[in-house]
Image 1 (cartoon, one colour):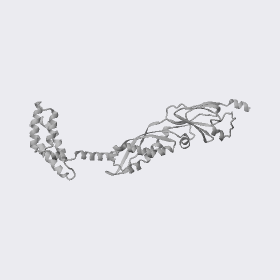
Image 2 (cartoon, helix red, strand yellow):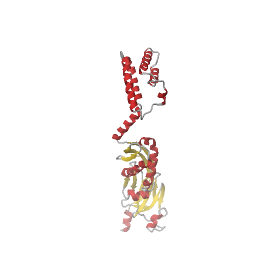
Image 3 (cartoon, one colour):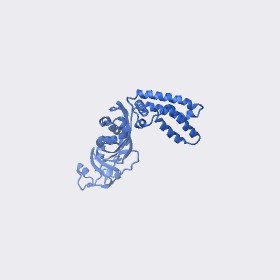
Image 4 (cartoon, helix red, strand yellow):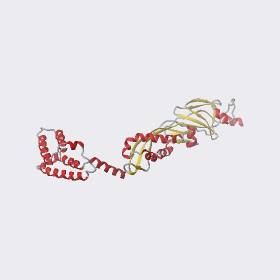
Length: 337
């Protein structure tokens, strides 16, 4: 009867795993009461590693290659089971395969804004996101801490943990950097390198190696971004007098197309320049004229209007091109007193 039971047993001669591309990181070879034949073939491909687990203990780890499973190639299993070198019988052991391929284009980001103290804006809340890549390097650690005895363990199950690991040190990183938000766009590479340095040891604790980390964007929440846009707009306007003059001058060609337009424009230009001067004086304590404007010879508004009328007439006659007119217009505006 014992002989018949032995004959009915199913023996495994080949152990291998062909990945199906679904993001599986760990996969247990299906045993179903089968036993591994002594001398069976184990094939581990270049993008894989395998471990043998005997009675809950990791016994052997195999890298890429093909080996015959004997007491010589399984010394730890042999020791655990007290097998001698003459052992010829089949044996049972759980076999797990692990994918060591690089997991590319993994997303990370801050689910909620991070509050920091900014040099220029005071207390602000920042968002950040980017991509990273990693691969499995230590199957024993990954098995013991992550995948365990599961039939399979997928990449998606690990994403949340890895993403939170990356974001965990981001608050301290922003605070320690001392870089103003307005300058962060120019320092995203440095932030990425600093985040990589903080996260790599935490990945290693799971048996993983962090290959790359990129910071793609650092931004403010929408309401704070609007305030920043207003501040940028005011900085771009700068000298209110020159801004008003620019706005008025841009309307001259359109006014010249209408009957009496240039004459009426003379009044408008004078009023616009006067308004600009008043605003410029009000903001003069904070804003300084440019060196080019202070060095140009001053002209009255009436002189500018008269000259522009003449130049526009030359454009209509084809003597001056529109580009030449625009260049002269810009030059004259610099001479307004």
